[in-house]
Length: 187
Image: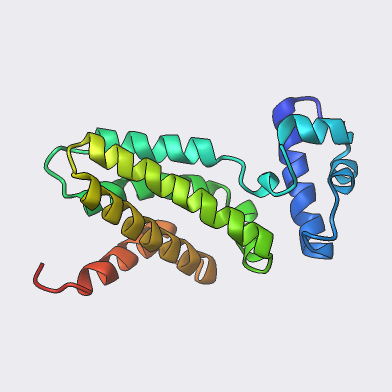
């Protein structure tokens, strides 16, 4: 039996990943996740509101990390460079959690309900980044465009990192942002 809340949470996440990979998301119940983790179903619901959220834990910490990095960036940086700094901080979190991040992305990719949740979470994170840019004085329209473009570029880099682990996520971020800039040469 897990001794701490954090340990129970980690075990529930691991159990969910294993079961989703073995049986699929739709065929797995919260009771099965709890049993595999060695806790009761009530404990599951103390940590997660539903079985989708097991895979999206940490969103608040990621949002806080990135918005703080936007706020702390030097004043003279353009919005995309500010976002790149924020994504580098997020990259450290993903790299530390690669054993969870990699199978998580694979499960989301094949599960419509999880893809829908992932899109909603991405929109929320993008909105938070746009707000952080706006507080730096970037006009609403440009802040929103930068945040959405930046988030798509970050997501592209994260997928490249999963597909090619020979380079760290920072290297994939550098490449993705260089590719983004190459789309508008001379600007």
